[in-house]
Amino acid sequence: MTVGEESSLPVVENKNIAGFWRRLLAICIDFLLLGLIGLVLGVFFADYFSSLGGWGRIIGFVIAWPYFGVMNSRICSGQTFGKELLKVKVSMLNGTSLSISKSLLRALVFCLPIFLNGAAFSMEALHGWFVYVLAILVFGFSISTVYLYVFNRRTRQSLHDLVVGSIVVKAAEPARKVSVVTWRGHYVATAIILVAATTVPNFVWKLANKEPFTSLLSLQKILASEPGVISVNISVGSSMYKNMNSAVKNVNYLSTNVVISEKNSNFGAMANHFAATMLEKYPESSAMDSVNITITHGYDIGIASEWNSSNFSFSPSKWRERIAPKSGTGLHSEATTPENVH
Image 1: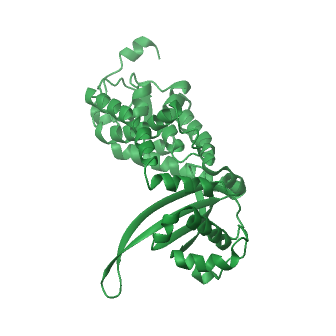
Image 2: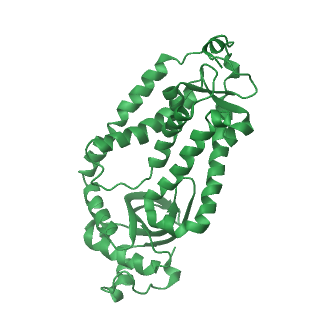
Image 3: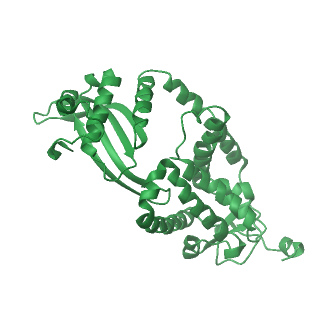
């Protein structure tokens, strides 16, 4: 197609632009397909994926990025399997299909926030300029993409479309030039979202320097240094429930989720060991009504995940009863009776 032919293409009407629900369903179908691929890979490489921890999401990224990048290009007529089923396609505003380079860039903007969210980064890496870039990519790109998907009703272009100048149209229509223009207010809103995302690290750092977060982060670092531990998440909170006499009781709790690398570990013994560390290193836990520990093994590669968990929930005094006879036996001591596990 020559430049003269492109300029003579008729102008597309708004009704020929793919709508919100078609695009959403197409994406859901694509991720369902990618998820099936991920589950098949998990059958053969589950142990390897588990050893990667949060970095396992790189596996999903190197599958999803080329998938969207290649199939949304002119190589596949701008259609992934989801778009083909929903009868929509990606094209440039001049009606031509995307080059492979532009389609890969479009897919990169779309995939980066999805697969960076949940990736493993050390506390040392989350300082300096890198954390601001990460905040823009994860929070700024994600929120901007959702905002434009929902509110850019005129062209339905999202962030990855605006970056390369693409648009999603109905596949049944012949190639046509698109003359509709995105409202400038959406550009302003997107810019505000991206700038606001840079304030997230400062907000997190301020919280991290206040109690109880300072003590919790210290405890998290101690637990994460244990052999075989991939990641640790700790939280404190409270909940209310009614007892049999309809009296409302407030329950304060400390919850810890520990992801481990060994599939056949003695979860009960590990829970006892972690509880002993928590009671010793975080004195505030003794004042809690409940100390909850979840031991988890599995993987998350972004397009598929599989987790097996064991939950242990006891009062501080009950934890002391469990661990007292076996103090000093370490991480792999025998577990107490399984009926105490929730």
